[in-house]
Image (tube, rainbow, N blue to C red; front, side, top):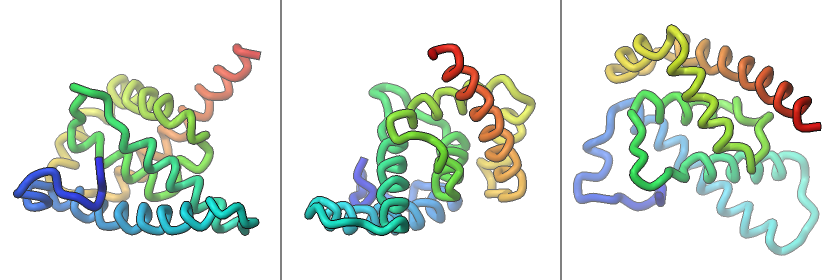
Length: 153
């Protein structure tokens, strides 16, 4: 997916208001990432803020990779983008973004949050509810990740 290009003549007119709002932030983040990525290729030393920007951009780019014939419901897109844009993925290695995403949906589908979130997010973004779920999930993912790391060592 190219964040800068429309995939149809309709473009953003077919998107929900929440996705449009998040897409604006996503485009800005990815544009900054691309600029800094080009600069980083020169091999110059980077400050910590620039390294964080590169890491976040890499995670966002990996998050946008979608499996073939695997469409995603809008409320799931919103939850993932919210988590990524609000730095909840900062503790996730870039190579583990797909593991994060899979476990995210596993926890969502096996929780009491799935149906209410699917209904409420199709209408509008309630940031308090989304923030609570993303925080809850981040806690669950850290437990899962720590357990997984302990079992593999």
